Image 1 (tube, rainbow, N blue to C red):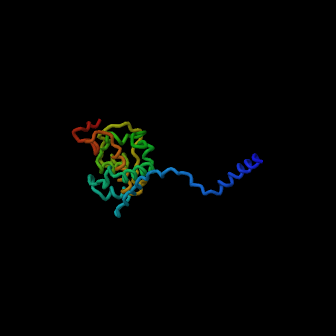
Image 2: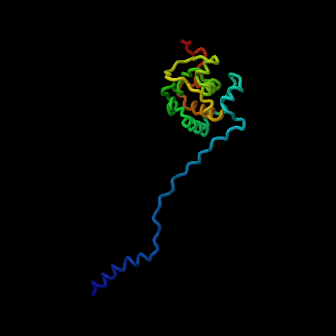
Length: 187
């Protein structure tokens, strides 16, 4: 009999414990939240096609409104760089491919904002037809195509150029182009 009561007790034990409230299983603490990424500032009201901006602005007067130390602008520029396929010729971070790297001291036509904006907008063939000459040498398999009608606005192009500047790995004094006395003579 004692054995029978012991068996009944053991069989009833799970039923008794099932009625007891159970504590919820311990959950790990939530991961720390990083601050949300700040969206890039909106485009200025006076944005236009980059080709129109080139036509409307005298040579030497185009200046990037963005700096390469603004993380939101650089990230937006990187996304645009990838979206417009710049990486197909210049590599994912500008290290080069079938076209020159964008991260070293050799700015083929010059590294100032005005020249870079016009080069990307017009392409290298049209840039040369406007009197620009190669001032540095790089391994180039294809000319720079005109991207002025492909990149939606001048604002997007400025953001791409801010991303490119953020990846510059050359001598700091050459980040915006070599000084004229440091440039090799054209071959």
